Length: 604
Image 1 (cartoon, rainbow, N blue to C red):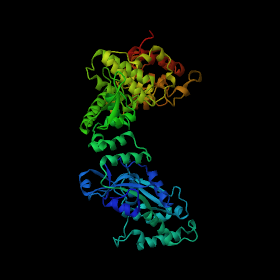
Image 2 (image 1 turned 120 degrees about the vertical axis):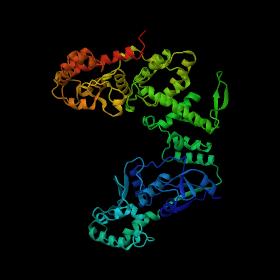
Image 3 (image 1 turned 30 degrees about the vertical axis):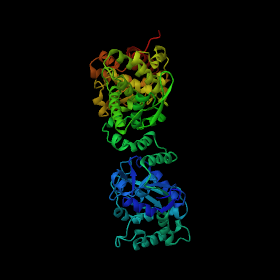
Image 4 (image 1 turned 180 degrees about the vertical axis):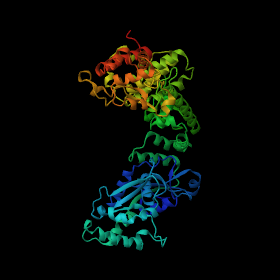
């Protein structure tokens, strides 16, 4: 048994040999390689200064576990042999070292390009380490032979690719390139041509020693013995990583579920083929867990998600307030069933939010969803209701709740409490028809007091009104085409200005609020990109004439613009290029539509 209290040390060169031959692997309950290129560069700058860069935590694997479990390689490496150690802490550093030094034919994670890291020899030899490691990206992979051909240019800019550390002598493959005669000649030439930029007493071995110092740098490593069980290992992993690069709740759940046979990230999330649902928010994987949590226990903050670990005992209260113990999820198989059900209802929720049919909410692009946090709540509501969604009472209540939620903007901040409260209210409504508090908070007076001229792009209210335009069958100014999901899937229609942002020739007395309100929702609508390009800097009075010529008469244009919440009074302001009056009239029209069409309560 290896004693964890007696750590050892390993040099970079040894660590990378073990990565290269597949001895080191990443458990499935780990996250992936997530560092940014700048973080890789900073690691090497710390190594060059011999700074402490943290310990490496390994789990020794016996042959049986090494062969039976599923593992990932270090980023860019391959799994060719039975692994010997699983990396519990240090993946980001090992992956960074391997990628920069071994230059694998692998695009940098979450990037579309291949990255090459460079060491600025001029800076390092002058003991100036800040920004001494840089990187370049290439659309096509550059192997060592291609990079080596440019060694003359290394002298000009003083930067050498770090993958020189893994390169071998072309004449003697068992010999390192940094020990080759070719590199020795290069060093002499480098010193000769850059003498004025280098310390006065520089020697050839000083240059070589810079590279050797990287390979010789030692990490402290802790090995955990192979007789520890998977539960113990996952708990150690979670605790250790909590003090490093912060793990998300999903990352931790991934680790805690693994002992129950649930491969949350690899099998359930990454193999889920609903790319549209995934693209709504980077936290959508956690939102799926929140949906399960709402249905199972009425709450969804992170601390409650851990109650979904199979076999975990949870203290609950009954209707009398008495406490009792309950296991919410009995097994890994039950968790997977809950996950699949959550995925199904999340997709139903997404369809309702992103389509324009009856009782749908018009977010015809993911970027127009007012609040992504409302998706798991809607999914949980549909799951709990499990009835006829075409029931008139349910449809009306759902519409009232949804628009009240997005217009209140209560889902825009830290929303776990709001999500849980709304879901519990919905459960009471489903059980007995009790009113939902959020619906009661939003009435005509609330809408009337909204300052829409201050509602800028990206806010929940902005997106809500864009969605209402889609539901109102807004037609393009020139083409007369009704917006729809097909149009938006090709990115041809977007939210654009009515008075162009760079409009010229507005009378000062009619545009006093232009600077403050030009980007607000009262001056935005849905039109084709091509139409927006045709409008460019034109005053509305000019492009209205073009619209009249296109559609035949002025009444046809008026009717078309009504689909954009542009009333006849607002139309007259457009004809006069009167921005100040236009935004007032359009604000009125938008508010009137909200009150009359989305089920907002009247003041009584």
